[in-house]
Image (cartoon, rainbow, N blue to C red; front, top):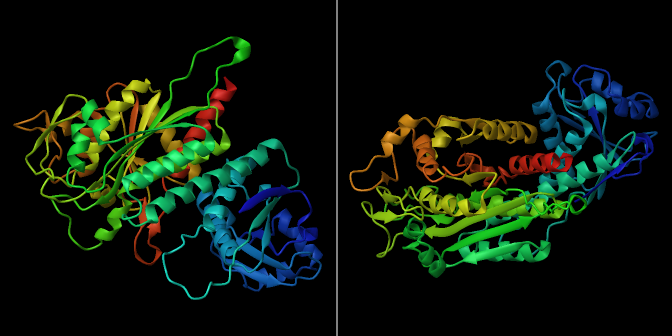
Length: 508
């Protein structure tokens, strides 16, 4: 979907679909009022007659409105003004995204108005979020079906945001939103593919092709390379899999030295580590059969890292970022790791494996140790790690654990900005006692209670050399039921985080 900014008055803009804002029980915002006046008050009469629902996201479609150049007009309710904020604003734009994906019109325009900005938000923020939401609304995963007839294509190819005036900042905001949506689409595609297609090798190929397209380095470590390094925790998970593991390292270097200052110093990179279990059977500690198909989504952390690299590279962010995706299947086999086995991690610490279904932390711990070599500004790992996190928080926020308060606060705020929220859980020293082992430095599980916390406590033992945060996305990475599919989360949060860091670098 191509997005642009236009300054033509809404009533005179020729388009297949013109989208106008409204509020429950309130006079129309200025952008809609000019269209109402051009149509001799028809919009006001329809709203007064109760034709538009009261809730945020309610819509009313009109055809051939007199005095208006657009073929169709869609009124969208932003909710009651006394409770207006980010949530109803996003609900309204989510409805707009669905309408754009379903309409027979080929192009559309959205009348943007300062009166419809949530409190405390500026136009650039709104354009970035809106362009991302409407583009994401057009996402469609092509299912592997034998269709005799190709269905008629619906949805717009172009959308214009109508503003009183435009500048480079606003144009860049629209471009950022598009790039975030494109990264999300890649992450969703990877998640939605069957595990027979999206193998560790496939993830490595996608990362390699992305690096080739955008000119950043990609290193792919294979089993022999990992054995030489001593990644025995990672390889313990891969032992039962027929698919060969991959350890993917992406290096985006956008923070160029300032030539005019004669500086050769490079910034310390942000390192993103994404769990890449392309299918998780549980191994010898086999999972129940119900809903096991959804274990193809156990690589969504890795998919979000690969997807956000597409975003930052497309935007040419002035920032150094390293992406690490340890990728393997976790399968039962005669060669599989057994409960009770003891392995030595890349860090030298030994681990008693009490449950082979607690495998994500085993591949991540070696990745976190590997990250030390980059002398990072911070490391953030993203993982569909524990069902316990879903029980604790549901499917609305992702779980956040961190060893640095400033990093935790920064991520929390970026999550609020993106509408991709986090909730911080404790990482107290007392939880470490639950990981005690009689036979190794630690066990890989901590008992029945506080499973998300003990998993994070385990990872923290490998992240002492830098500022570190862990995002448990087990509840937010995909949806079940009729809407089953990857959500692309937490890519919006990661993108907002990196954009803010890049802007801070520019200002310095």
